[in-house]
Image (cartoon, rainbow, N blue to C red; front, side, top):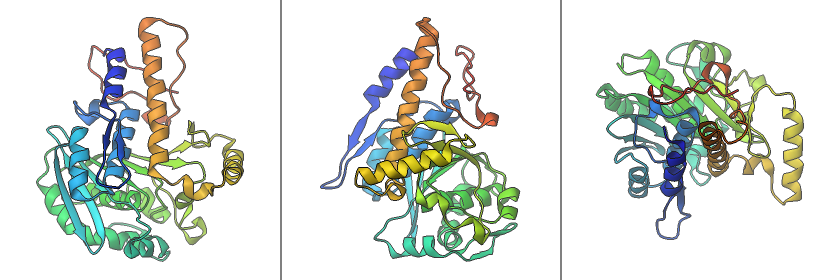
Length: 324
C-alpha cells in the first residue's frame, strides 16, 4: 500500500455535513474496501463516526453515511429506541443510537440498575434489554437476509444496546455471526456469567473519566464486556492495565475543573472519542511512511489488546506490522 497516498486520501476525505442550524458533522473516514481489510484504528474511526451519525435523523444520516461509503441505510425505531443499518457492496453495519438527554426513554434506560434474566445465560441490565427488545424483531428480520460481513457499534446507551444485539445475533439462528463489535463510552451491561458466556470480538473504548463507563456500579453485580482500549487525559491510547490510570484520571479531573468543565461528563462526548482515534490513526500512518521511506526511527503504534495487535488481513503487496 502506498501509505503516502493513503494519508493524502484521508485529508481529502474530511467532509462536513450540516443540516440547518444543527452542529455540523465532521467526517474523516472514506470506505472504498471491505472493512475487514482496514487496520484496527481505521475500523475504530469508521465505527465511531457511524455511531455519531446514528444520532441524526434519517435524512441527514443518509447523506453523512453515503459521503463515507455507505449509501444504503435503513432506520429502525420503536418507542424511542433507535438503530440504523448501514450497508455498501462489501459490509453491513448495525449502529445503535446512544443517549439523548432530552429523551425520557433513554434517561430511564440508563437509570434502571435492576437486572433481569437474559435470553441466553446470566443477567443483563433491565433498561438496556428493554431498549433492545423494542427493536429486535425488526433487526432480526433484516439480519436473517444478510449475507455480508456484519459489524456492530454504538456510543453510550447505544454501546450497551449494540453489545446485547451482537450477543443475540451470535447465539441465535441467524446465519451471519458478528465480525466485530465496537463500543464507545458504554456502561456495564450484565453480570459475570453473561459476560463470560457471550464471547464476542469486542473493543470497548473508554475515555479517561467518562462517567457512563462506571455505571451501573460493579457492586451491583455488573461487569464490562470485551477488551478495553483506554484513552488517557491527553487522548492517547494506553493499555487498559497501565499502572498510572488512577493518577491519570485524577489529573484529568482537576485539569477539567481548572478549565471550567466537569471532566466526567465532558469525556463522554463521542466527538472526544473520534478526535483521539483520528489522532492515533494519523500517527500510525506517519509511522508507516517513515517505515516505507526509511526516514528515521519508526515508533510503535498505539497499544492494543495483545490478541488483536496484528494488522488485519492485508494483501500480499502490503507489509504486516505488529503494534505494541
